[in-house]
Image (cartoon, rainbow, N blue to C red; front, side):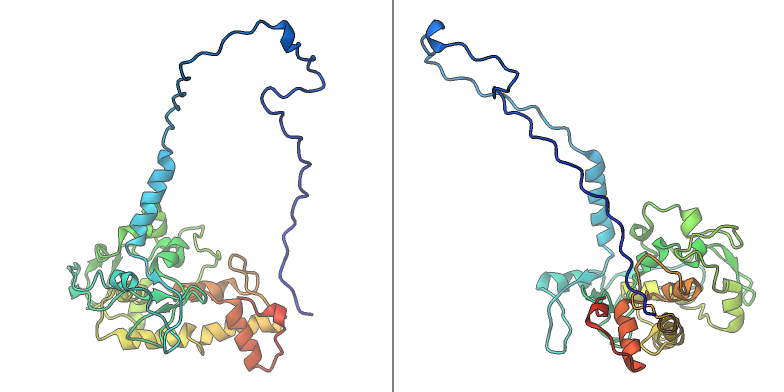
Length: 327
């Protein structure tokens, strides 16, 4: 039997209190005002009344600091634009295009034996409807999670940048992420979300699933290209997002397509579980069907949506009702 979207219970509205009486407005308990004939009349003063000075309002420093922090984080956020161009995509206004190009030409110096790089590509733009990111030179690469969103969701159990030692080179790796924008982890406990040791008892992953293999297994499997990104996929992704391009890009994009792309194995496994269970909606902040696979997809910069599920169901021959067609 098909499940429908959960509805949250709402408390009944509280009865409204009667409005407070206006100043000098008589109420039933007020005595009748005295007759004006019995009150001595005094001539009105010819000098105008002095205006009352307004009391200065104390600034809300907490709100001002939060506003400044949001603006600072936005420096490294992709430009979100709307409207359609000739090819069904959009490049936004002239101001938006300039914002996307602002990092181009910046040279980044790296440590730990990795190659320095110069940013040559603009920031991606984000579709406000689908939430997909679009890169000008890789049309087929459309993740829907930014590097910042991934790290703030506790991905890799908070330990992606923990100190590690390469068995192949023998060198220790611990200062290789100096180019990771501080705005992306501002307000987070670095020891909990970035450099957390392997084997912690609890989990900071959003979906509370202990999945994935550690750095040592990635190196053993030959998945790393240490001359570019000593730690692998996620490190490649955040640098690609910022605008670096290297000869490992095509391989990494192909890996992403195999996991989370339109025909990605893990993405289709996840959607298949929903279809088998008769669930027609993917909730943004709830997951009871497959926490492990959803956590894996989040590590690969993708969070499945109801639109993904609807397309998958239609491919399988299901009739998607109008009330199932929301994102």
